[in-house]
Image 1: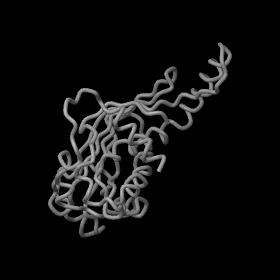
Image 2: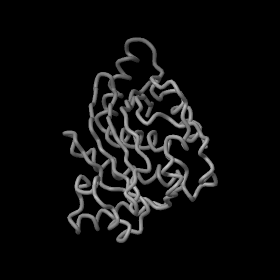
Image 3: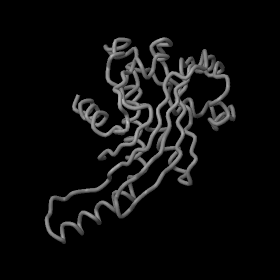
Image 4: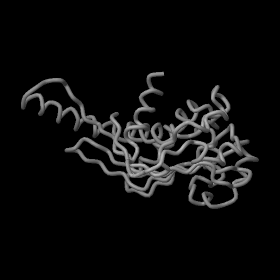
Length: 227
């Protein structure tokens, strides 16, 4: 519950201020309410950055936020083995193609494509900035059901509570270590949780097909979140 409340505040406070109108989920994602997908296949992320590990960390951290939204998620580990055996590991081959085969093979109603366009780490600032896009497509009609993209900065700084110059140096050192060791995992989880929070609730939540009037974040966003 605390996590949901926190994310609600994040969406309200940190979404880009450039918008002049408040939209609802029903207005932003009408196709979701028409198709009513219940099961989702997570496609291997498309990584356009030099950070080769970003693909793996994003892929392994997508299932939880989708499940929390009320969707049945095809096991990422089992689907990965199948995709590799069928030489279908590169999602670029399918993002603009016919997805009906994925419905036949996996029984998924929709396929989620993730594109990582930028990954920039600032050691001094103790932040990770990620430019990301999420595209959920129907595996029966190929319609785009959900599309959201933006830039998210994850603040990895640590505050020890100590004052003065020594305390500041301790905090800087601790933050640098944290940034070096956990940046990929934390940044990926934060991006996925923040962006997919806007997804209409799935069949396995009590608010399924009744949250059309819920305020939605921007289709394009720029935000900062604390780890």
